Amino acid sequence: MNSNSSALHDLVASKLESAGQVYTQKRRALVEALLNAGPCTLPELLLSGEDIAQSSAYRNLTVLEEMGVGRRLVHYGEYGRWELSEELTGHHHHLVCHSCDVIIDVELPTHIEHLMDEEFERAAKGSKFAVDRHNIDIVGTCANCQETTQA
Image (cartoon, rainbow, N blue to C red):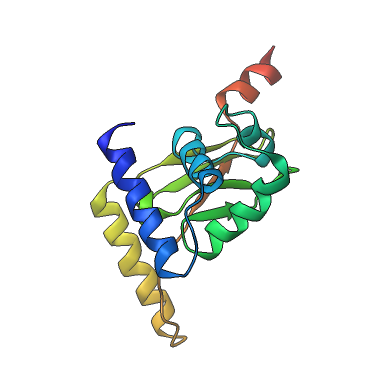
């Protein structure tokens, strides 16, 4: 395990402990799988090789979500996808394939993020809405699905 992974696990353990939760081996395996896989479905997590049992995976993912460690992404596919929270991984957006439901993390340049934040604040101001954050999904067709339709 590298030092970044170790620091991540220390942060997760601290977050859970401060909420009266225990960072169990099963939760650690889920965090490790999410760290390695990116946005993935529960079936994909179960196949990750991290020795994750289906019987407890969903329950533990829910606890991790409640504690701000993970988040569930719901888009067009049959399954929701799970990823580590932005607090742990950094702010990013998603490319979402409407054909196969693959989700790819993308980061935009800082100056673009600042411009978007300013515009979102300006748009919300008239409604007296307080903006906390933004999430943007860019929906289209991934390279694999484009190749399939062209073949």
